[in-house]
Length: 376
Image (cartoon, rainbow, N blue to C red):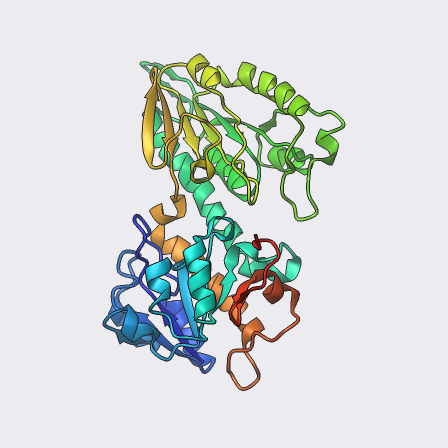
């Protein structure tokens, strides 16, 4: 099949959906690959490297998608991009399915374009190599700590010198999913004293295994606070109040706080109130990783650092894009792992499959919205 890879056009998006490494493997599998010129430049992948791997370079998006069977992207296409895609083709990307522009959905269906959302990759063992949310969240958790340490502006580890002792930074990780676990590991490697919280019981052991201390209200509701898919459930108002009280007393002593809590399809839960922020020491830092879904702190703003009485509240809406080479490499491998599921024996595209991974990821097909999770 012909695979096209487009340059990302959204502001601040530095990633690309294929690397020379994955292009070489796609070509070896019998596919033809066309890359839009400079698609990987910001990530450090030059056109010449793609050509050496066996890809063709197209001068613009229109030329790149001509005759394409499937289009690889990092972010889902916007309305004007949909208009350039071939009728009856397919696109696979991080589609942000719960926040899709109706014009995009209408455009996809009008052109009978099949769209597949990488966010809907099932969390099953067989799909682990395709799980883009995990691959990108892992890097995001790492980068959140690096950004927090930079804004904090003081040393992270304890340092004993002839001039005196520098106390280690106290780091609090709120939400212990993939991003949170990597944040814990990174903060520990940098020498911070790390505590963490989550509403899922399984997180307690994971936190301890990384050498951090677990902080949570461990009542009966806490023991049943995880979905079958491994995500945190939305907790009752009563539990949230008890957890907030515990958090409020703990957060006043922290130097860096990283919040990671997200619930698919819903606004991010508020974990840090304005009062909690104001109780923190001047010079403290909050990094809100959930700012793109409303934020875990109501004071955070996308891609801004807000100063609240000396406390810096930083909202980063796209942390993986701050590590473009590694983020692109992992995402491209996610796509590479998924492609065989929609490849027929003769090498053509085949979406007529009962494979549970494919059916879970399909949003639109044949002019209709087929995914129950996004049907209005």
